[in-house]
Image 1: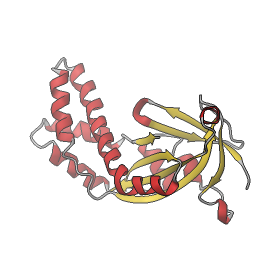
Image 2 (image 1 turned 90 degrees about the vertical axis):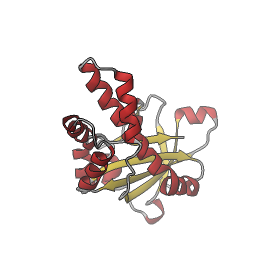
Image 3 (image 1 turned 180 degrees about the vertical axis):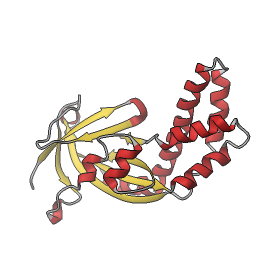
Length: 212
C-alpha cells in the first residue's frame, strides 16, 4: 500500500478546511504533516480526483462550482472519525442537513451583524430576529453530488494516540433559484433591499464543516 503526504491547512474561522496540493505535495498544517495511507480509490488503483484538491483551494462559490462542474449552490461537509461506516452514515443521514442549516444561520448572523453595525442600529436585537427567521430555511431540495474519503493521521495524533482516522468529504448542492425562494420566504416582511443584499451574500457563503 503506497503512502503519500497531503498538505492540509485548517482555517478555524467559519469552520473551513482547505486542502491544497502542487506538483509535489507540501504540508502547511500547523499540527504537522498529515500522512494519508489509503483513500477511496486505493483498492482499485484509482488516483484521487482533482476535485478533492481543487474544491478546498478556495471557499468561493465560483471556484468550487468550476472545480466540480456543478451549476448550483454548493456546500462541502467534512467529518473525521475512526469508523468510516459510522461517519458516512452520520453525515449522509443526520449531520449534513444540520451543519448546512447551521452554516446558513451563521451566514445570516455575520451579514446582519456587519450591516446593522454600520448603520448604528441595535445590533443584538436585529441579529436575533434575523437568526430566528434563518431557522425557517428548510434546505429542502438538497442533493448529494459526490463524496470521497481518506485515511490518515497528523503529527499531533501520532503523539497522542497514534491512531489513523478517516476523513469523509461530501458535496451537497441546491438549485440556486430554490435556495433564493426559501430565503425570501423566511424573511418575508423584512426590508426588501436588505433581504436582497442578504441573498447575494449567502449565495457566496460556502460552509465546509470539520468535526471530530
